[in-house]
Amino acid sequence: MKTFDPSRALAIAAGVVIISLTGAAFWLSYAHLAEVALSHGLGKAEVRAWAWPATIDLFIVAGEIMWLRAALAHRVDAWAIVLTAVGSLGSIVLNVAGVTGSRDPSAVPLLDYVVAAVPPTAALLAFGALMRQVHQALAGRTETAGTVTPAPPLTISVDRPEVPTDTPVEVPAVEEAPLRPELTAPTVSPLVICGDQQVWHPEVPAREDDEEVTGAGVKRLPTEAASNVIRAAWLTGTSVTETARQATRSTSYVKKVFARLDEERQQADIEFLAKSAAPWNWAKGTEVPSS
Image (cartoon, rainbow, N blue to C red; front, side, top):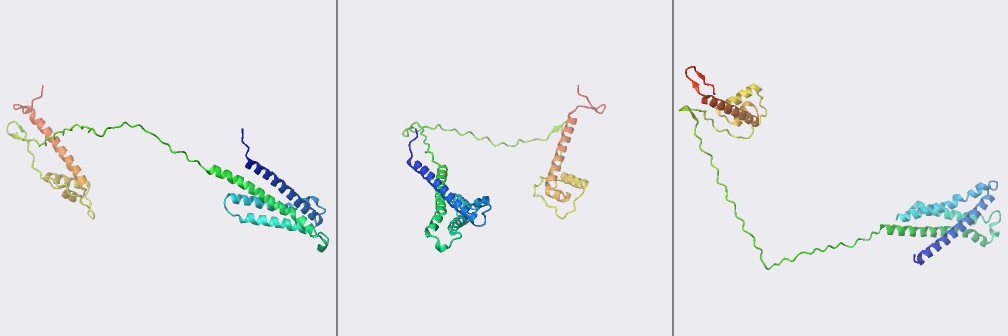
């Protein structure tokens, strides 16, 4: 069961009273302005006479609504102030001026002017109070929606076993792995086939891995000529850098050609050794086929 909220009940009651007051004040002001219009130029057009006050009083409504919108946005709207002021002053002045009519202004009692000024003034104040109530209600909802209640911090408890610190923990000793012995290159004796026959190659000096020589401004040799230069340098043991300079090629290209020539020489040696190991028929001068 909902509990009774006095503040909410008073706000509702005030809203009902303010709305009733605003409606009554606007109706009195509107009706008097319609009578003024009927008496001054719109007597034969009753519909237009009753529509004419809207051109004054609706300025108050529009200005107050724009004022409320600006207040919710926390800013000042100059147009809202101007429209409200023009509508309010215009309604009060026309209501007061319409009292005179065709009579002499000095013969009109002062109380008649007061009676004419009360409805538009009351309409202005009542409508302003109504907009204030609406503003407070909307602002309260905005603050409630924008307020976020922080969640309580999450506390996690972890049960950890107690570890005694007095007893030292024994750590097993780690045996160091023995170092591998240094590898030494085996002594290679020359291959001897059929007695004193040996496979002999001319000694070639070790090539130098120099930095690559830039060939800026040097005319590039044709492919065949460069190949001949590189092959001749390989036979004579010329360094890679010097060979690259003579052949007008990069050192990386010369290294690749040297490697390919080394492979070809090794393949030729293998074929030569295979032929030398085959039995020889001295009578016919041919190799004896293997059975």
